[in-house]
Amino acid sequence: MLGSLVKFRLASDWTKKVQSIYEMYPPGHLMTEESTYFNQGYWETGNETYDAAQEALAGLLADTVGMREGDTVLDCGFGYGDQDFYWLKSRKPRQIFGINITPKHVEWASDRARREGVTDRVNFQLASATEIPFPDNTFDRVVSLESAMHYQPRSQFFKEAYRVLKPGGVIATADIVPMPGAGPRENLKAHALGWLKWTVDDRNWHDRDVYAEKLSQTGFESVDVTTIQPKVWEPWRAYITKKVADPAFKPTVSKLYYRVLQKAWADPELLKRELETVDYIMAAGTKPLT
Image (cartoon, rainbow, N blue to C red; front, side):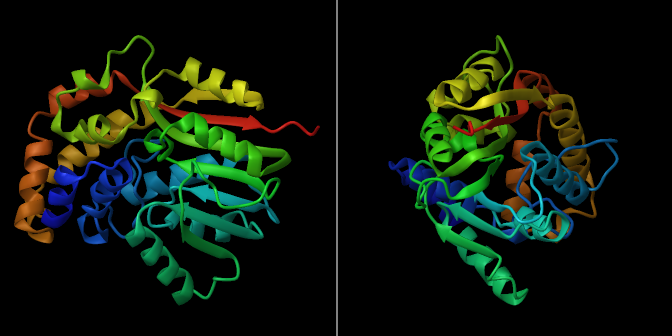
């Protein structure tokens, strides 16, 4: 973790900066119970475990993109790949291809695919979502689960997704943008939101209406961008705040990591106020048949 922090501080290249942030959180430094999901979760009741909320978000994204049996799917920015293994079982696509710019994520997910004997159905590789290494008209679905805010820029990802989708194919994202009328990212002071200041491209910091416009400008039809903010940020904040304060949690992580968490969550009320200015959306669009 300390090494990744040093790499982040010294990195001038955008890709290396984003890589170092995510390498700072190996599986042992996640807040999950058993999984290695890397998202904020979709909290339908507010009383779920973190694992259940994160899997629910993956399920909602699959519903949004219309993932179904026999599809060929591209997952951009897949983290540790938990959603892909979940989709293999629950949605039964023919194949899933995952691309990611973080080598350790690719290594971890690929090892799991080998252990579970599903390398014929899921393949992970090192690549950028803004330079997708596949031919035109390859995929039925393109998805990005809480990672498109990092793409440099997101609009280039939309163009690449449009290119590799088959006619009639669908793109869907679970993504983070500012609420309408919110100020610049630089106004965010809560330590727990520092990563939004450090690893989100300025060109991606616009509200959901602009998001829909950019999808439409790329050529997508039936564009829909819906906020799910109330079922993401506040229940997530409440859950993590409670977990960090639980005496039973402290012995389960390193002293350094615990100090980082204490600093990040030192002012939960500030975090609560600032999260009211941050949106969480589900977006989708369809490539025309002609």
